Picture (tube, helix red, strand yellow):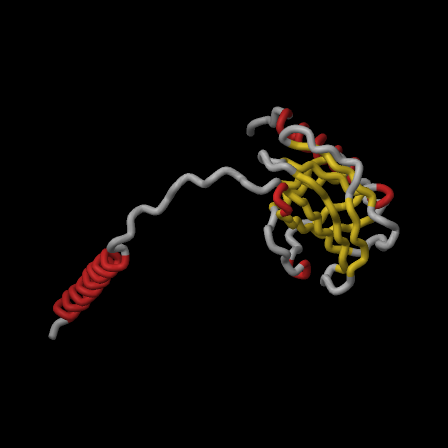
Length: 196
């Protein structure tokens, strides 16, 4: 057999393999999708309130609610820095729900130890959103992460749980950091860079 005929046989084999693969993919795809219509639809609007945490007067963490309690050891998706004097500020977007109570739980980061459990007072729900400011008790240490659970009580005695990790350090200078970031962003976006 000549070299040319071997090359033709190899090309034919490769072409047959590609055709068989494509045909089987199409056949299997049509069998698997048989009876399945397009199931996309528009999502329903939010039904649970949303909490936005603030650090240094800047909104930084959006917390979405859970209608069942979660294990706080696994709820570490964001860190909220507390302000001076262990103060935590947040905004509640009600999405039309009536809020009847707010309470907090502070636990060790692994959730094994309850450090503080208290009702939040001094807030007033007015309109679509409202701000809340709370000061945690002096039971937490600086430079130590804790788990904070915010519990909103809705009409009909439904509870909604929000989780964040908190860190208290009076030397963080949050507002100065945000101001520096803002200045840098403004300088970068407004400066006309020379073209080469």
